[in-house]
Length: 217
Image 1 (cartoon, one colour):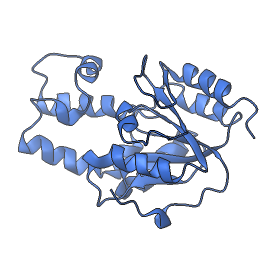
Image 2: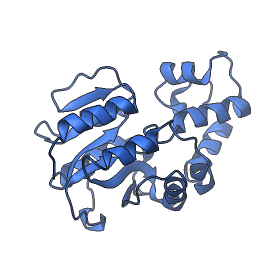
Image 3: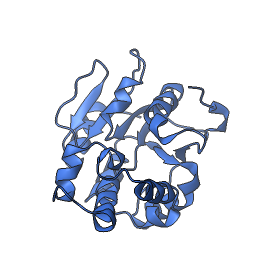
Image 4: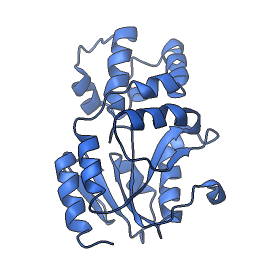
């Protein structure tokens, strides 16, 4: 996949990047709750049970109608939806604590560029640091998001020394010699030769970042 590096914001210092969806915001859970209300819940599962059973809302077999797909397509590019997403508890507190250990240099998200304004509003409202936001170009399909993000991390490796992210699929697209650290939020284990650290919660992310970047300047 070709990534247009010239269009990326300049990152002037070395540090750590942050994912947003399901790392800072409870995006998947919010989507599931909305879709249960609108389109039914024939398995009678809780939001958390659906999250455990299916990787993505679009993987749920009974949410495959044209009506559901149209609703999802509309809301993926909704700035209003982004501003109303629930906060993952204490993610903002720990992010700001981490910023005292290592510089935070960017948000790198597979959200489309069309929702960057709603994303800025949400980050500001929830007291996250004001950083450049790198969003997936609208021309790159959502299903190619992990590959796109891996290319961004590879090309920014000199300044972005790692990322806090919830998506283990990202590891499948990073080169074997990638030196950055992937702090995998909400994961208890990881199977990879890369420097990927499972972090069950934000307190664990904080402790692992403190250990990895002790004395970083």
